[in-house]
Length: 410
Ligand code: HGY
Ligand code: MN
Ligand code: MN
Image (cartoon, rainbow, N blue to C red):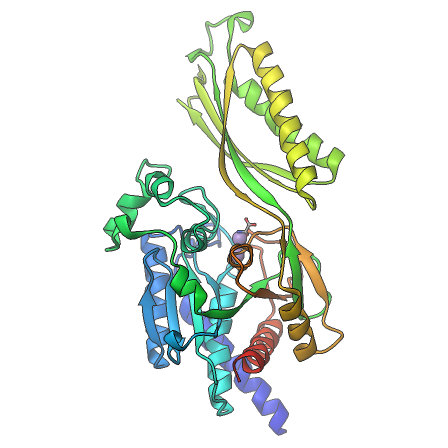
């Protein structure tokens, strides 16, 4: 066996070993997907896994005021840090790679640099952002938004999950002080550059690794439809004020408007009260996720849906209230950093945009020089147990991240 072959085998083994240690945490055997909602037992176990792995590498681990985890190689106080990382929470029954790939790759990239006796001149950090998916408390990238001041701490504390538990209560239960959440400008100022490695979430990559150009503007809106709860058997059709009809119309209107405008719109979550087969519902809550290449298109899409739904509600005898849960503006990643990544990885490295949101986008919006590496997704499926990356591409991602960190930190 040649040296190159044995190095490749060692990289694959290292990948498999670390990946396998995280893989059981939060996996639902019934769906084959991951349920790691922030601050749940599964999320806490994943966070413990990270702390154990970081400490085993001699990295200094700290939890910031917003619950994000940081592991340092070198002293962050010296500034100009090169930070990588991603998130470990998931959407309900999500895939194994969304977020976790970036965290596992970060740890292995540090191992790779050390095995080559690379000595960084700048501190190197690995961050695990909390509640990136917004699957528990509704606001996407909550940890990085709090860190950067993109969400009001007072509003964040009062966010509730599906059972009515507030973020403040969840943080307190995890041993954090909810009163102290909020922006940390000093911590942000220490970051010279942030590079998040992430599974590519469409079919945009024909080779193992690419570099991100930007992120579509996107957001989440909660639509609450209210009618009159009543008996399904005895209430005459003409007498009904059924919010399910208005909600159903909203789902179709969102899909139609997105198709007409070239955006994306999804209603992937519904809550029905009282949720009984033989009752006309009293309320239906629907969550709209909408995205578009241009902010003006997104604004038009959402405005058209709102107008058409309001008209329909009048016909149904129902009411509709719309609340914005989180909005993210368009992101163009730092051009110099993006070009530097391409120069490091080779001129044939593809540069592509995405319609998926990321903590790197939140940091970029806050003025931190940020970039992303994408790793090929052979099926293009994400937010599903079918999400997949081959071992060889995972190893290629680690190698690419290690080269980028070495270039930026040395
Ligand atoms: O929802 C998103 O775009 C991301 O995957 N969090
Ligand atoms: Mn995701
Ligand atoms: Mn993600």
